[in-house]
Amino acid sequence: MASERGSDDAFRMSTPAPGVALIRIIAKPLGVLTMAARRHLADAVGALAGDPTIRCAVLTGEGRAFSAGSNIREFEVTTEWIEGARLLEVALNECIANSPVPVIAACNGVTLGGGAVMALACDMRVASASATFGFPEVKLGAMAGATGTQRLPQLVGPGQALRLMLTGCTIDAAEALRIGLVEELVEDEALLPRAIQLAREIAAVSPAAVRATKRCLRGGLAAGYEAGMRLEADVTAPLGLSGDAIEGKAAFVQKRTARF
Figure: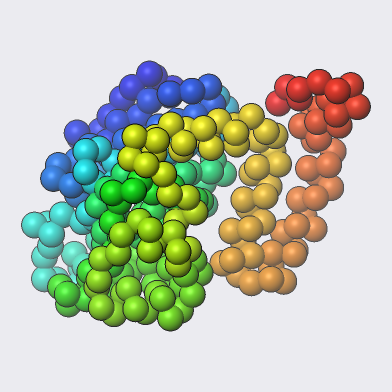
């Protein structure tokens, strides 16, 4: 991966640490994403799986926003446009969620609407103290779709999810942590270092085990306990016979750091 590259001035990619990709949303204003930007971002996330040098990714914003969601100026009152936009946003969020490369959302500020749903699709969320979260779509006669109505209750429970989605209220980072919307809360200046540290820790362990774990967990969440157990049964033996497993056990016995 190049040291830094971007697409349509919507995001930039860099490698701040070995094995770690940093995707920074730079779209103005407030990280608002056009349909074209979403398509290019999905392509960029999808390409991570084919890059053996990347083992974890961090998705963040710039300035005072992670992302405020969709560019409302693109909206067209037609069934064709609404359905096309929905499918495009779902595709991006599913690409993030289903990527074999874990994605950490570093929520640095305004995280609203489609931007908040995109953060839900990530594997974990670290918030800065000044971050805010909300799903204000109902105030515009819409809903937090594109997987939002399904992902939010998995994190915070149905009652809290409905409170957020039916009122369109905005909450601060402390409340987001309290209800389980984010996993960690740090001071503003510590956000990116902490997210990159987490990504480095993931990048240092067995990539085969990371991918198998994420596949089973996501599969179980999507299709239920029995489906998740079938996935576990499918991947356990191949994982145990993998080069990563052989190296990990050898390193443990020899009391050295594994070289994955």
